[in-house]
Length: 207
Image (cartoon, rainbow, N blue to C red):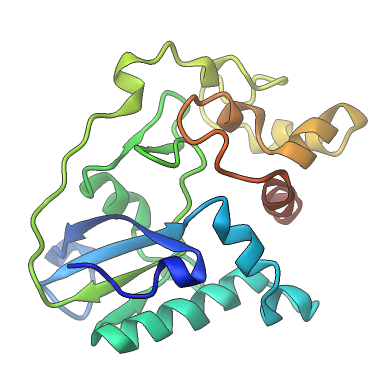
């Protein structure tokens, strides 16, 4: 099953997974289609949107709700989002179950197309039971440059968020702030998909 209109709004299917009772949803059957930015086209469409231009908080979350709610309505499905909690929906688990995303050597999700820039803006539940997808993790044959790319080694063990944010606030951290996380950029998959302006937007929101 293909959701109609995704490319028109800069989104793409990031994979899908069957609903399980452990998901805690109000339905125990069907399929969740995971949606993410179709980069680089996504940024031009989003940055021209009312949500981006109105100056109010959380523009990307508000844009995602407007777009994905409309897609779900047209499909006769139900939209779910990784924000707006607690409680939060288990998108990390759903991504792993999709067969197209895996835990990378630094713990972040890596996607077969988006690499370490994997981002999930929402999911649409449909009643159909779709055939599972399978792909090979790009990490299987990769020398893992992501493990040594962080200038402050914030990903050596568990993610040291304080060390990361402290570095980003310095002049030396400008390249990460303007181009995106150095560890994510080191991934050979999807590295050229995310535009610097989009990377800077996410880094500013993170900091």
